[in-house]
Length: 142
Image 1 (cartoon, rainbow, N blue to C red):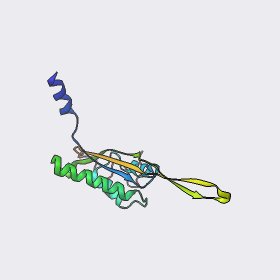
Image 2: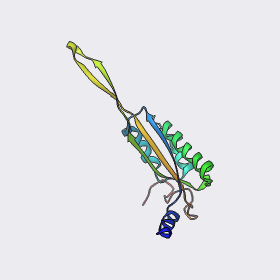
Image 3: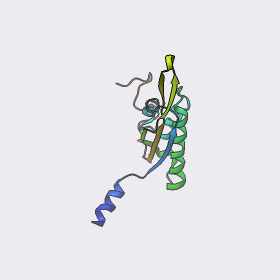
Image 4: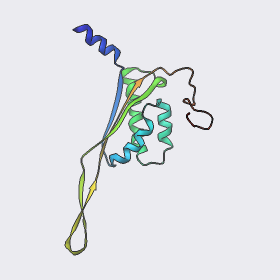
């Protein structure tokens, strides 16, 4: 029984993770940004986030950078081989506020929060792909 667990742990890649909790941003807005960086090399993901116009790109950038630092410092992984293996945004607690309306009524305002989780792992990059990621000169895939 001991060798099967050793084999499964040897087969499973080592992942470093970072979590940002209670980020004052809607999870649906964060998920749009997270979808841009899944399964991308670390440097490419950071570049996408750095130049993204979305407001959610800033906290996601910080979490990706933190996961990369955890991989480098805690697990001794090479930064050049890191890939964003998993990234997701879960819903945190909702702050409920009241907006006064006409004739004594009140409308509820929901201020949503997110928990952003990013996991990076070390993968060897294929030598033949280059920087174009399998695309032609105009960026189209065929």
